[in-house]
Length: 174
Image 1 (tube, rainbow, N blue to C red):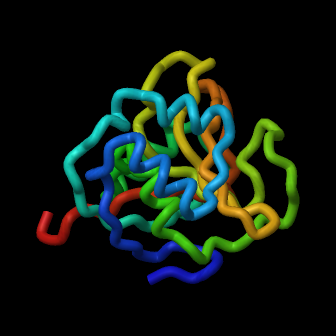
Image 2 (cartoon, helix red, strand yellow; image 1 turned 90 degrees about the horizontal axis):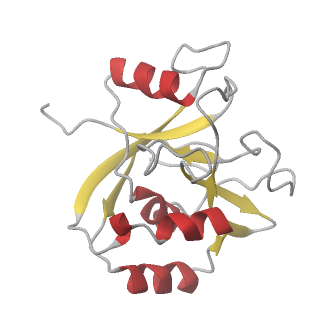
């Protein structure tokens, strides 16, 4: 179930589209991309992948018990201990297309060294350990326009307890 402020449980299909078709579908939904998202979408992981069904749920860093904030590695480790799974590395664009009722950001600031207001970061293993290469995607709505944005951070960056992440739930019966 979703509402404008939080994803409690959202089933979606990830994969199944070759890069050109994925880009056409994003454009058809008027999804805006920043240069970091474009860099990520050029990665080989976005060659056609088989379709996988996942169920996504949102957690804040604080929901994970990290009330003082945490690094990305700490956030991911804590989520795993709570039975959450990282999303497939190619999940970001599919989640952006599936989640139509994301609450808009209260501000237009696009880059400030922190997660923007009302953004949702897709929890997935980074595609590169290079700090200059984008770590992953986040979703945001600014002035009514959906964005799929890539972000960069190093291993020392502290995520706020209010920062929101999308994780996968384990398959039923596991």
